[in-house]
Image (cartoon, rainbow, N blue to C red; front, top):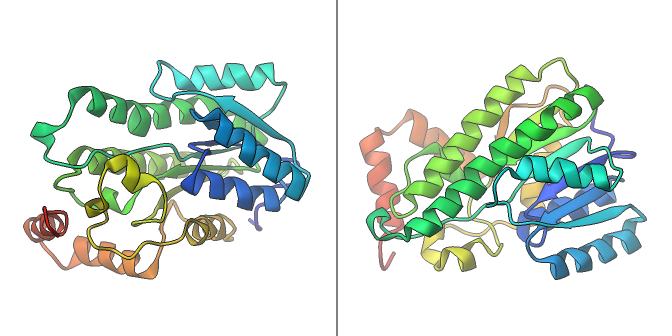
Length: 267
């Protein structure tokens, strides 16, 4: 395989109104891809679409949608058909976290977190992966997290959802080998986005230095450009080291206690 050629492609990006989703849109537009931007905040999407059309002369379509609704994959495929488009790449980026002890969390918010972070990722991947495999020249990127690599006290559900995304995506990588579709799970660490505003606290960063969205997206695109792309990639050398240590050199008990201390009140 050679580097991905995005010219003539149409990439659908969820959670595209800010953060990593908006940065994926900017970098892929710069590489020639037309875009379908999906999020709840239509005004943000329209502003980004205008910016990218002017800067890169690509076609950009906006779809206002709450992915916590029932069957988001079918809703998106229907909308894409109505627009007369053929999506060749998908970036499942939308997601959010709930911070605090699990027994104190709002059950309604937790159900929505599962709907967006788990159900939507699986449903959209299933809805589009057949056509993506047929096209055989694009990518499927599901955004996981460093939280996927160990249990996360005070973000227990978020860590579990991202472990699901990592496992699902790596399995799809194997199933898609030979089809021409490149599948990747991207695991960022703490990143300079609205994630912490939605979570409600910077304690969710566990004291980590925040990475830039641009660097995280460059890591993903560089992995996809490899001759033999990996099933997953962790953004940031320090994060890769921490994941290795957590898996190889420490017990589960030790890892859980360390993460718990990092996210404890007053950390």
